[in-house]
Image 1 (tube, helix red, strand yellow):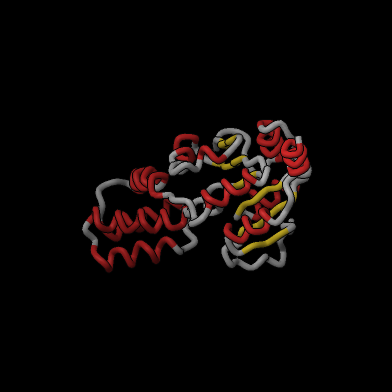
Image 2: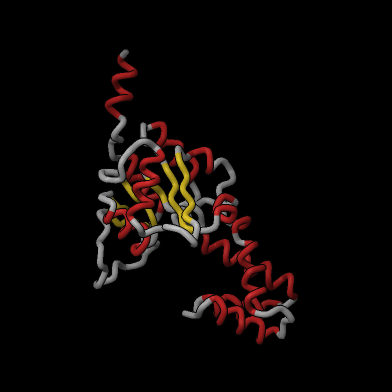
Length: 224
């Protein structure tokens, strides 16, 4: 059972909102300034364009790249698991599932999001650095499966990205669960998930109702 991290297990979007609120307080821009930050965050802009506009709006000394780096560095510490994630991962493991984490990003940033007992609930963790192979390349799905002594084919991939998690997992021969957060499946989606759920809580309900591949082994062990 392989999970994505950002906006699948941890609420990265809420971390961004918390970070913007902290930025507004730190810079003393008030309620109107925070409203501007929240509005611009929703625009289809590049990181450089976003922080360029913020710099101009508040007449900040730092350049856009420096502002972006500084803000990005605060986000890992603000990430928290969605409610029930830790308990549900523990329940999956008790039910006989092997659990693994597969996420794109910088190692130090992604590991900083795995506090509160989250890290200990995975049999393997693979963080794909931007400079190397990363999701959706099938090789990384094979690598995380090998890390737990399995093959990707026949496994499960759970994530919120159609392009990275669903497409990559499907290409590796995995059953896929798309955590949609209420988004409709695009008509032109190149790959369709095997299962679509609104939240990770629903994903866990689905998985816990599915017998793990190790269930027979567990029953045999209990009978001995």
